[in-house]
Every structure is written in C-alpha cells, then in structure tokens.
Picture 1 (tube, rainbow, N blue to C red):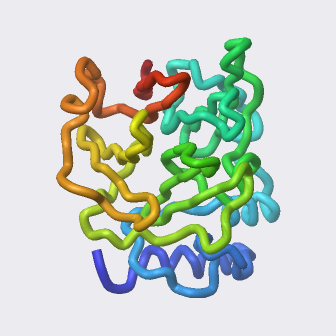
Picture 2: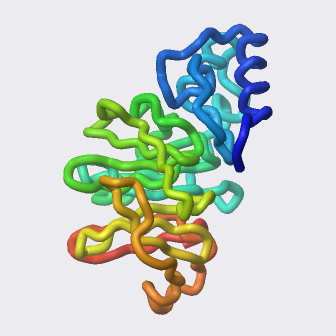
Length: 232
C-alpha cells in the first residue's frame, strides 16, 4: 500500500498512447502530477469523456436501456438529489438513474458527471449535508453545491484507519455521518476527513437489517431512515 503504483503510472501512459492529453482536473488519471499511491484505481468522468470523444461511447452504454429495477443489473449506490424530490440510483458504476418519488416513475438515465460535474464513475455516497452533496471515490472526498464541484475538492482522505472499500455514506437524524464498509460501519468526520471512534457492526446500528453485506444507501427523508440493499 505504498511506493509507486505501477498500474496507475502505466495506465496514465497508455492514456497518452490512445491519444489523451493531460487533464486540468486533479482527480483525473490523466492529471499531469502523480497523486500518490491509490489502492483502487478507477477512471474519472474526465478520463472517460475524453476517451468517448475520441472513440465514441461503448456499445452497452449507448444501446442498452435497462431500468435499475431489472434483476440483471448491479445497483451500487442510492441517494437523494439536491432538490430532495428525486431519487438517484447508480447502476453498474456508470449509469445514474433518476426516480421521481411523487409519481413513482423512472425519469431518465445519466452519466454521473452529467448531474455532478467531474464526478468519477465508481463513486459511492451521495450524502446531502448542509446544502452540499458528498461522494467518496477511492481515497478522495468530493463535495458539490448543486451540480458544481466546490473549490479545492476533491480532497484526499489520509486517515490510515479509513477502510479501503466504501459501500455507502449516510447521515442519521442526529446529523452524525457514517461510512459503511461491507458489514461494518464507522463514524466519519466530514470536515477533517477522518474516522471517529471504533468500528461497529451494522446489525448493532440497524436492528433487523439482515442483508447488511449489500447495503448501498441510507436515506434520511421526512424524519425517517430508509435502508436500501442492492436487492431491496
């Protein structure tokens, strides 16, 4: 988990081979400066959009139109949009579906960066906190006001106790923020980007939630908490 990440450097150079130039976005793989060791390498939306501009969209994204209620797809995250009216569901790390809560109908499919500029695919979270929306991708924390990435973000999470895998990020009614990693949950300080206290089991925090290994979202809506797994 330290030293030079050969895979990251090699993928950056392969980006040049296929025709990509350096990016101005610090969270992109094609950013000019080496970001340090990243255990889970994922392409940002800037890298993906640059590739699409050269070679066109991949067939399954441009042709398939499978709603997230299908049994054949993988649901990765679920959260409220900043207007607190629409529900957003991330599918297969690449498609972001919008669901109208009032009409109970699927509206439209987006790429994550269509609604949140420069947000990379593979993100987790969607926590709405004090008029800002927070996402985590790898060891980077993203913060948005509506669809605009805030200045000086993304910010690196340097806490060594931070789990390498993040499945969800949510806020309880008391406004405490938590991160889910498989069957464990951690209180998280958004301002200082660090874990607070000891890890807990999800079963301790949410009694009766048996499908804890697949938790993808916890939504605080109308003073009630709604828990979502990748199946229910």
